[in-house]
Amino acid sequence: MVSITIVTWNSAQHLGECFAAIEHLDYRDLEVIIVDNASTDGTHAILQTAEAKWPVIYNTENVGFAEGQNQAIRASQGEWVLCLNPDVVLSSNFVTQLVWAGEAHPEAGSLCGKLLRWDSETHGSYQGTTSVVPKGLQKDEGFSPCTNLPQGLKAISSIGDTAELKPCPDTKPMGDMGRDLHFDAAALRVGPPEMNPEADPRRTNIIDSTGIFFTRNMRHLDRGAEEVDRGQYDRPQYVFGATGAAAFFRRKFIDDLSIEGEFFDEEFFAFREDADLAWRAQLMGWKCLYAPHAVAWHVRRVTPERRRNLPLLINWHSIKNRFLMRGKNASGWLCRRLFFPVLWRDLMIVGYAALRDRRLWSALTYCWHVRKDTRRKRAIVQSRRRVSDRDLLWWFSDTPRAMEVASGKQSALSSQP
Picture 1 (cartoon, helix red, strand yellow):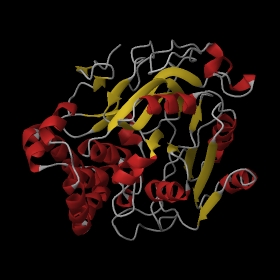
Picture 2 (cartoon, helix red, strand yellow):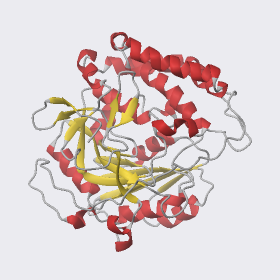
Picture 3 (cartoon, helix red, strand yellow):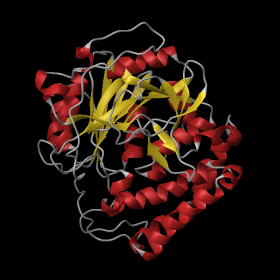
């Protein structure tokens, strides 16, 4: 059985299409578990309808993406768990492709498909995604652990100009995933005709993610992001990790990576928790398999080029979590080998917080306040590691890297087609 776990927070705009796509999956041995983080936008009305089919957990406050997913995962029963954002629309064979790939490659604890951009602004205005606000931060309240945060943060802005996006073709060649499989153009169709790629210009052929990679300054990015999909990522490969928008996990993997009962580190609240998990998995010897014929569409708003226009809380968590992630996973040896690129990036972040936006300074001091918890988690992670940093160093590259499945040969992939 496959468990689909979804955390919602003011996600009403996208839930209808997300749920419709799940209903039209060709993999039928499914359970869907939803956790709502105290939505106020009409999400509850949609979820009350969904309750006839799927269990819904209603939180009285926004506990964040990480804790919400942990709640859903603990309530799940599946051998596989698909952690899914509500702003993702799956192709009908998405789960089937990932199950087949996972069964053919037991060394892979996590899997990811090809995510393309869902241009939600082409028809209808965009009002928000799964972005979250910390506990206690409402319109006129501060964030109690970090009192320097401002009052009344602005609503999330739109993703900007997407005029260059084009509809996504609905035919992809089938690769060898360990089985002799074939399908026709209809395999990528989701639901009724009005939801098909050729009928819905919001489904683009612009790549959102084909897995995540780490640069030499310990920054993680989405492989292939912003490229036009021309088939350059159409072969199965091992990548560093899966983006959290639609990440597929083996139950044994979840059990092995959980620290003090937490699969996703709840200290992260939201943002970078998927990269932290991927780094931990690499340390513990698990592989992440990219299965290109599992296709989905995702609304993406948090991208490097838009960072200055993002709401404060997104940037606040991003800075805080960068240092929490490194504190748990990076050894002194790895930091020395990557010293200059990491130092330069850190100076940019600290300088920006000190000189351009003092409201972000509390993200840096937060890491100091939770240093005891970080040290404790770090000791657990490092005691269970099975891979040396000398082997791990290869993955930290300014050119996205992947490992070929058939031969196990390491290869660097250009970020250009």
